[in-house]
Length: 496
Image 1 (cartoon, one colour):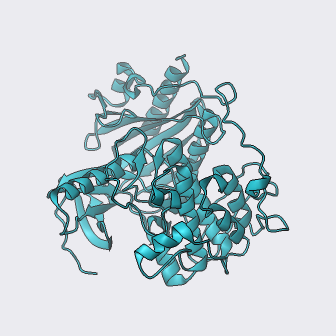
Image 2: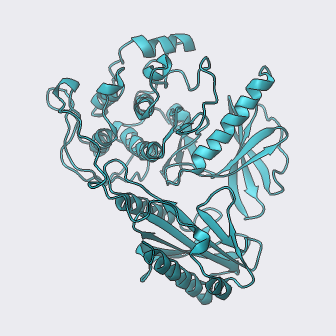
Image 3: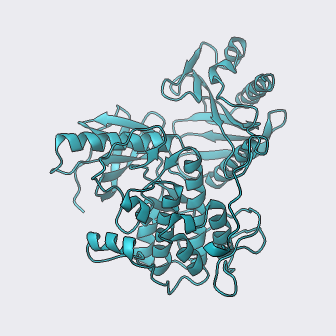
C-alpha cells in the first residue's frame, strides 16, 4: 500500500496522524479532533485519475449522500458520521474511529467464522439495516469490507456511499453499476427493484462469505461473477451447519421468496444460540416471538449469546400463509409526537441563565434535532438533542424509542473507561425525568467535564448535556443537568 501523503489539517481542527487503509474510493486516516480532543477517522475520497469532470462531480455528490444518509441514523450498530468537509477540491468525511478490523480482514486473516459467530454478526447488521430501511434508506453495498468488528466484539455497519434515500434524486446514471460484484442482489442487477429485500440478499451473501471463506458466486472475473448471481443456483454451503438453510433462503433469486426482517432475525437468533433454524425435512419454518441478542466476542471465533424466543425457522414459499397486512394506525401506536419539537423552545430563558449564564439558544442550521446554549470552547455549554421515532417492524413507536434508548445505555456502559472518553461514574438511573431515564458523566482529555441525562417521552428520545471546564464533573454541574432535564421533561409532558 502506497502512502498517498499526509493530508492537511481539515477545517482547522482535524489532524491526520496515521493511515489506516485504502480502497477503490480513497483512504481512511486515524485523526485527532483538536477542538474536542478526541480521536476520529477521516475518509479521504480520491477520484480515479481517468474520471472526467462530470464523473468527479458525481463522486462528490455520492460522498455527500453518504454523509447525509449516515448522519440520519443514530444506532449503536452504525458508524456515526460527525462532519463532512470540502477541501482541496474533494470531500472528506469525519466519522467515529472504530478500533478493530473489517469482517473481510477477519476472514482473510483468521479464517472462516463458526456458524454461530457468523449468525451473531448477521443479527447486529440486520438491526442496523432495519433502522435504515425504516427511515427510507437502502445501504446498497453490504459486504464484508463494510462491516467492522471492533476490539470489544461490537459489530458496526459502515459506508453508506451509494445509499438510496427516499425523496433523493438518483445520482448515478442508469448505465453505471453501483455496488460490489458478488454482493449485488439479482433484482438490482436487472434494474427492476431496489428495496429492502435486496439489502438482505447482500447480507446473506456476506454471511455466506463469513462462514464459507468465499463469496457464493465468486468467479475469476467480475463479469462472470455478475452472470453467476443472475443465472446460477446458490452453491450448497459446506461449513455453515445450522446457518446453511437460512443462507439458501435469503439468497433466493426471487425477492418474494426470501424471508423478511422478522423471520430472518429469529432464524439467525436460533443459529447464534447453537440451535437449528430448519424443520426436520430441511424446509424452513416460521414461528416465535422477538427476543434479544448480544455479541460478546467474535475475533477469537467464539461468540456468547443471550437468546430468548421459542423454536423458529422459515417456511417454504409454497407452505407460507398469506402475509399479514401492516398494522393500522389504530393497531400501531404512533406515539404522542407526530413532528419533532423545536429543542430551543424546551428551555426557558430563565432556566438557561441559571445553568449556562451569558448564552442564548443557537439552533443547528443543518439538523433540527439539536440546540446549543454556548459552545465547547466556552466556560459552560448546554445542549438539548431530540430523536423522533415512528412505528417500525410491527412495533409501536414508543417501543421502538425504548429499544434504541436501551441500546444506547448498553453501548455507553460497554464504552466506560475506554478511549479518549472515560466514564467518571457508572451509568445511573435518575428519577422524575421521563421514562427509562439515566445519567452518564464523562471527562475529555481537554479537561472538560460533561453530565448527560438521557430519557424517553413517548416516542421521543431526549438527551440533555451540560459541560464545563473542570477535571471532574462537579456536584453543581450534575445537579444543574438533572434540573434542566426535568424542566425539559415537564415542558414535553405539557404538550398535546
